[in-house]
Length: 217
Image (cartoon, rainbow, N blue to C red; front, side, top):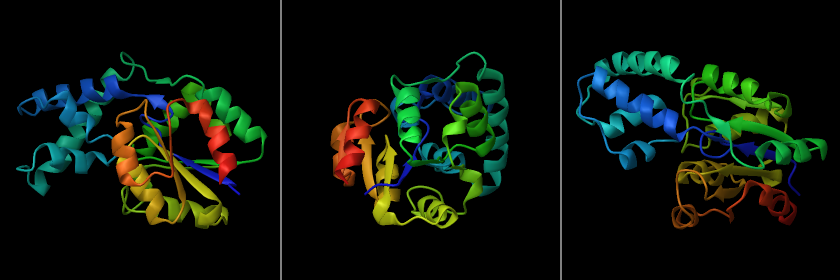
């Protein structure tokens, strides 16, 4: 029986794609690098910023990464008020139902915790979550299982009673690595085939379907 639900944020709870695309494009221009394709940028959603930069531009040396991160965050702070992320349909209502039903709800995101918590507060859903982890709160982020394992330890829960919900294969890999159940969502940044190939126990097209999925495990 599921007692704990661990959510990804970007592409699962909130539509942040346009903000991420615009921020990446502007940061690349400021750093005098060619602007990567939308597909290439979207493929990095779900992994920490530093890893995403190196994925897009493998020629960048480790000593250059801090300047990239600084530029990205400066651009992000400028653009976040213009390309404001919104919750996907049915997210707030479903979170309210799950919280009221007694499930523990948490977040394991590759987003920095400062912007993650800011978005959750602004969207009015922060009170539903018992524990929130950003990329800066772990040594090894997705696809490693560490964020889920840390969450389990903090909340004294077991993997057998946990489900991880995300839109990217790295979310599924993180959950499976922790021996938890997993559920992919198709409306984010990856498709059903990719989520199923990653080994998701369930895949849903609408967030509200999660309530029925949880009852199956």
